[in-house]
Length: 237
Image (cartoon, rainbow, N blue to C red; front, side):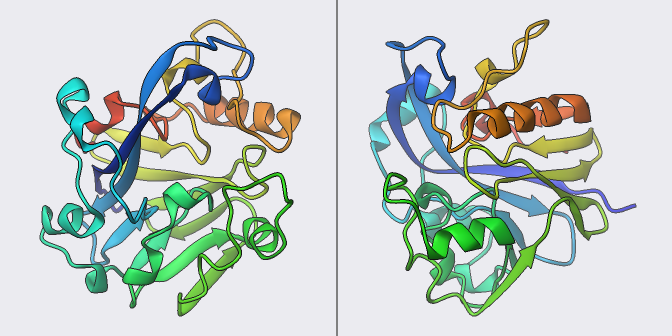
């Protein structure tokens, strides 16, 4: 069975309200919000989970969080890659902070849920985070339909609600099965001994709840919330 390492790379950061992460909980508390690209190391393909923001935001926050903040190109250079080296990008979802650098990875195949692509092509006016032209320059897109194995040691779980076709990515590592959430979240969304807390930004609150609960019920050995500061402090595996 294939085993990989997950290398978190921060390609932007801003400050937001905790309530943006946790619906009906802890509004008024300002938190740092790291934007990640996760590099999957150890296989014969160069794989990214998301491609992050094109423009770095608030670089001064690295001292507060202990996280180095890179441009996309510098992030890849830190692991010896170039954008054109990337073989595969698996998207958690298509909000702009997760996919703005796709076009730079000219040789990459993009994996995304078909419901996410459908919404991308005709977004609701209220969802200003998804832009119709964001994947126009991408050569190859594979549309997935629900839970699916991508390759040995890597699979996706359909986790909608935050967006129509969000997907969480499960990666086998030496430390166990790691799950990167397919929706914006931090540790506060998964309180011990309490019901799941949905993302503060969502299209369907019931779907979002079910997706958070699906992640909890999966019982991954390592849970990586998509915007957790702690997630960036070490690689997994």
